[in-house]
Length: 232
Image 1 (cartoon, rainbow, N blue to C red):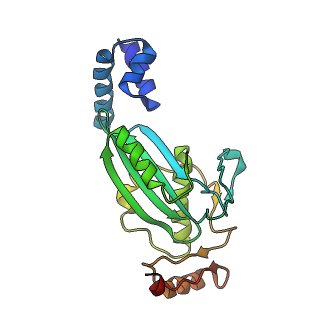
Image 2 (cartoon, rainbow, N blue to C red):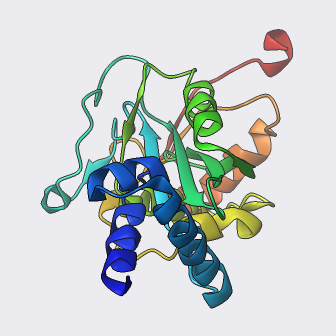
Image 3 (cartoon, one colour):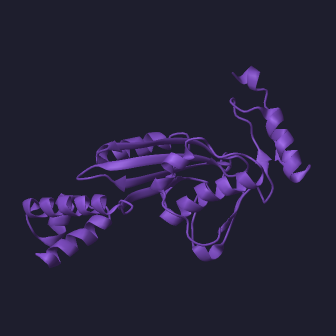
């Protein structure tokens, strides 16, 4: 039984459902289900980071950024029109038996760091897939990504924004646990082509952001002028 348990643990870590695990191992689902529940309970009791179910980033995430090629991270939509600057990241982790906890991040990788977070929200895996499609609906698509890439995008953009003098998004500390800790030095150079590039959103105080950028880098930044009142 201990050998079967470890086989279940290994397959569960890849995100397979109890039925899929039972089929892969050639046993009844009624044998696998209690083992999955035990493994989930052990993870919760240990205080360890819950197992990763999936991690995704928006298409075109790398546009304008410099990436260490040794990481092997790909982006089929790199450089496509309308991509770059705002990158969405979604992370799903196991939350007990047959449930997942989902957390999303919107990062301005050219200037301001994390702007919005969503969750964590608990749902079943079908709900997760539906939410994932909705979460990335403003993009041309999304791709599965290594968790370390997600960490680099989110933590790295926060560090870049902090270096420019901008504060972290107020809820970020409460939701960064879904990412886990970043490992090693940054493999991404932030800013558009290495320079801060500011695109205002309706909630921004544009003049305040411009003043802070000038304090941080002088005139060595780019920006887009948007009349927020006319757009509202």
